[in-house]
Length: 148
Image 1: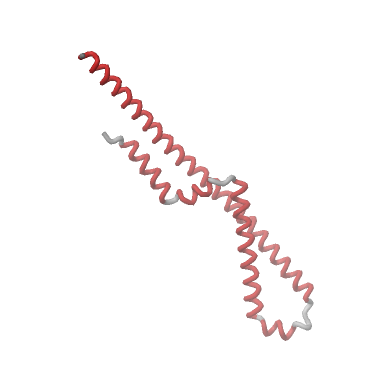
Image 2: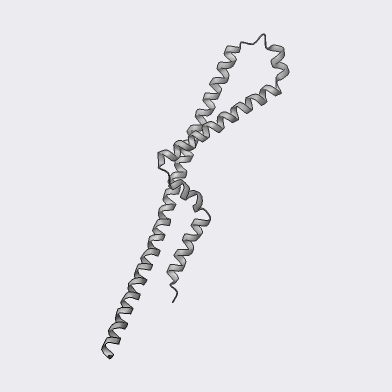
């Protein structure tokens, strides 16, 4: 006979694994500090690449002005301004990224915990079914022994 509770729990576990659970299971394999550090490192790298590309794009758009006024500009203050802007933008981005990654990790751990609880319930159902089948075979053996 089909155990409806077991089917419902198995369906719920399967849906979690197939849909939203893939990414959350990957996240939960990391320690919190490791996951957040890795994401912040990725974020810093891609933000640096983005900043450089935007600076090159700005320079290309303003090339005429830069070439006409290159001899008049204070390159040291321009460099310090660009560096300060870079540090400011990256630090704000990394702080926001820290909050987002902490939240993602917390949500992933919580949902994987409920997934693990579902798996424990399924396992308990299998243990109960195994005990019932084992007791049924012992009962059958006793019935056969009494007839002989």
